[in-house]
Image (tube, rainbow, N blue to C red):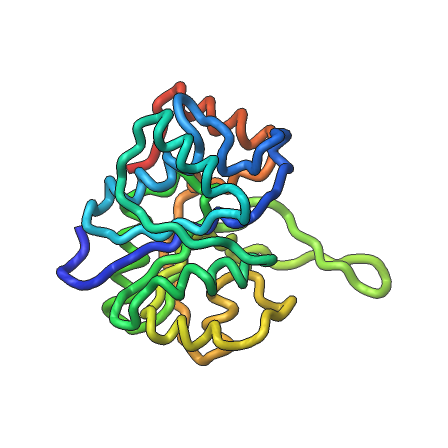
Length: 231
């Protein structure tokens, strides 16, 4: 558990991406016995039942979510915000439900295998150092950078793959989001850095995969069947 302080997480499920090969947005696809989004919420509830959960849903999907919660008897307490036209706007909408004295995490709904240890490291680091804390893993592949003349190799030792949750002091993150959206904002850390918030990297987990394709869904269902989930 985390110390006695106000902590919250915004689970961003505001997109309508259908890349996972389903007629529904990927966050509603079933993994194992229930929708992916329920697994993601449960991961944070298992970590600390006191954690306040805000769920950002796509426009027009609130009723479906309510029906799924009834169908699967899903009763973990959470609040709902409505997503915007971009991830930036969806996070901003979620932040409207967060008070300034909280420490808030922003997490991709499509990462249902996040572990309690990763969650804990992010919140503890953000709280102790009054900074942003983001989980990262090494880049195992060879990487090349495109150039005017073709391409060139990149030293992968200097690269990290970024995951979520990304955790920040809520007051500072809410202030950081009081700017127009910008194509250079690739994640919440990039928004925070623009506002002068320092970012610390913490160890992530290679099993904290982001499910974006039908192949990713196959991997996720395999992990569920195997019971090989992080803790």
